[in-house]
Image (cartoon, rainbow, N blue to C red; front, side, top):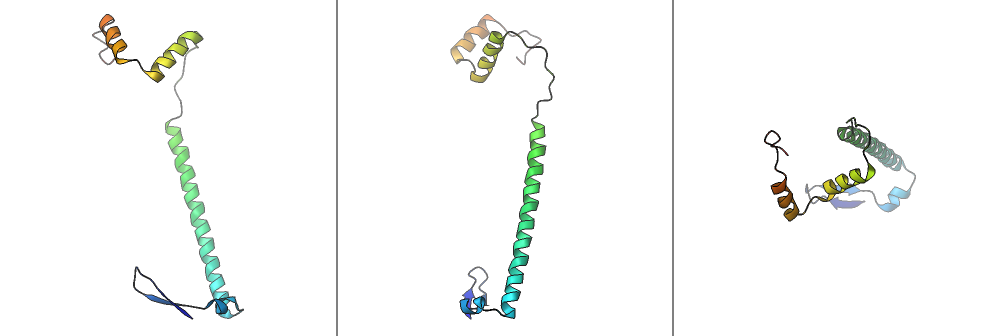
Length: 111
C-alpha cells in the first residue's frame, strides 16, 4: 500500500500498490467498476456540455441571420464602390471636404 497526501485538503489516502492493482482480486474489480462508472459519467457530462454548446451556437447564430428583404440588384460597379466605401471608410480630410460641400439635411440629422 502507498500513502498519498492531498495538499489542498491535507488528507491522506491509502492507495493499493501497483502489484496489487495488477492482480485479479475483488478489489481490482471494485476499482475497475468505479473507474468505469467515472468514465461513463464524464462521457455523459461531456456530451451534455457539447449539446449545450451546440444549442448556444445555433441560438447565437440565429441572432445574426440576415432576415432583411432586399430589392433588385443595382449596377455592379456602383455596388462595388458603395461596398468598398463602407468596408474601408473614408480618409478624414476627404470626409471633411465632402461634408462641407454636401451638408446633411436638417431633417436627417442622424446621417
